[in-house]
Length: 503
Image (cartoon, rainbow, N blue to C red; front, side):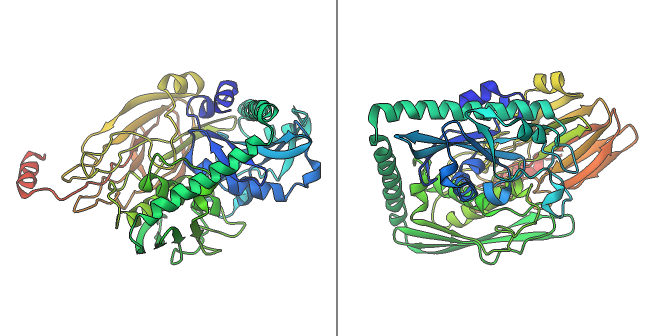
């Protein structure tokens, strides 16, 4: 399914960056299997599919139907992510669903790329596609497709990527139909066994750890203040409660994260820490209970804006859960903790990019330099693609030396990416870790903070971590991403040596 969507897609965001995900659900909308795609998409897929099914009557399903929505309060991420699902029939009954999510490079709203840095309500973030039949008998509804393409700055990309999603679903339905034809009800029996297996696997992992309560906090940045995330892990035998009570209330800024994002980031952190080889499906969530107070930054009420919650707050949820887990599991220091979202565009074009950084120093080795971390798992857009598709020229792309936090094992280095704007451009940056560097562990030092600026022929304008500006042709956008935190205290002899060698 994922290969079909990649191959059929139009936008560099899908074809090159692979900012999309696919999955298979059972008849109740529970995640059975997922491709190796985006953690923040995949962890929210069960929530999104279950929510979507409540808006569509069961008897309205027919073979070849495609249902679509991008409403974050239903689909579980943000407006740029369009979710589509199709039913899988066997003997005239819906036995499962195939699902896909794709990040559209533009979905309307106040800025090209649609991740507004200053939105105070969701209606400023783009077009909301309420649950709707996108296809009947695999044929797209022309009126729905026209509505979609008429409300975005990149209609050709939206049209092509939406049809690529349909291709992915059709691939999934075809493959599952063959399995049902061969094995009949044995397919759904196998799904049930898979969920039970992952549940038992997870319970075994949890029961092998000492029961107790473990707490951690971390910060997200707004221009005028910090927003706190707080978590308590309550481990009781083979059950784990993850409680985000104490986190700040929702804000009139786009960093609110719908509950699907909170579940995604929590699930990711737990899986990564407990056992990276753990198969993942809905069985994982049976012994893991996640709670975030309604109206909080991690479970907001409509119409709170949420575009950056999916990309930035998800990273901080992973950070704070991993920090709590580090109380009883040996883990690396904090990674860069931001996706460094860059949106460039004008009235009829939009470019979107997330830029990697450093991972945290590890108990037995240094962190990794210049990679996408935690909740993103996308690729970079190749320089050749950027320059062939957009009025942009990449003038620098390199590691940011010495940006990892010092320690017995240093944090990984961040990235420097500098882009020359060949025409007047709206520049939007949505990042974080601008004031507070990624934390170190066991005496390791924090990684360097992010740095964003716009260089004109007369000046260098320093940008905040969440800001939009109009830039003239000839300006250069400079992105310096954070390094990871260091792990372990430096021996005194090393400190003296490093001080002597510093400029």
